[in-house]
Image (tube, rainbow, N blue to C red; front, side, top):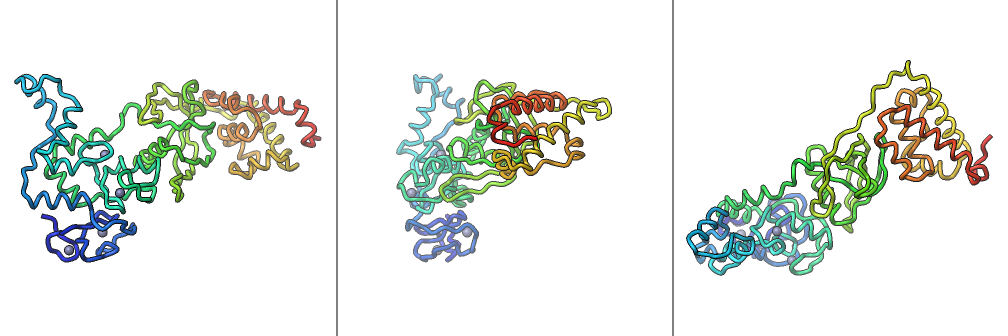
Length: 393
Ligand SMILES: [Zn+2]
Ligand SMILES: [Zn+2]
Ligand SMILES: [Zn+2]
Ligand SMILES: [Zn+2]
């Protein structure tokens, strides 16, 4: 039987805190007696699932084993016990059968499967943590009772329920865990939003539920990153973004600071829970020898003098772009030393169509990319509004 953290007696009609610890509700404690972090006020007077489970265990009912593996189900068919092939429906029917009340109580009311990483809300309802978080992504309320909740699911599982599930339904819990991991081959999640380049920061807002899910999964990996592509289906190139910081706002949106690391080509793609995942191939520049690339210095000089001139004359769109996030134009030597990154910096600042700029993504030659930038600059100089709007000497 479960022990109360406070009276050290058998747990009776418990409440469960955000830390996953439970005590008898009769003690009237607002916070966990262990003074754990992440305390949120309780919004109901008892943990619904744990209370039911405790009374069921006291009745000492046979718990049964509601989820059988497919081999066993096939045996049933061969014996003629059931004429239908093994199916999910059948398993679900078994789960909710009155013969297995404990299994019934340990079923998530969102996915109707055995609770996985069970977390208990402030309103004392329990769901799989991934299920609850995905529900909160859509609306920060309890899926059962509609109580307003924090947009972030409790981080700690309900300790007693997890222990019980792992003891009584060990095999099923292990197989539940394996279905939670996305495919390993298509291991790059893609955010379809805007053009990004390596070497530059990008600030993003995550508010769509599918991308909040993608972001959470990316943050769980050892190296949090995702691919950015401008358009979903007709773009084969993108930029990998490292996640530098995440700020979660009260309304559940996330402000994410990223930094472009490398370009990639999409080799294969699929849909995972509403967003795109892909297998990508990294694109690197061909080796650059500064001494055998005489045009490089003049290309850098050309781009730099154009940007410096605009900056000095406070051309509104340049000042806005520079002050937003990309910083002032670098000194000539720095630009030449980092010509690869400089080519992307120049392109990002120029006021031309993003689809046009995206042509730089597959180009492996720095000289070629800077040549395109110079070509765009020459085009801009010829625009009628450019002469009027900016004073070019
Ligand atoms: Zn107690
Ligand atoms: Zn605690
Ligand atoms: Zn669930
Ligand atoms: Zn609730």
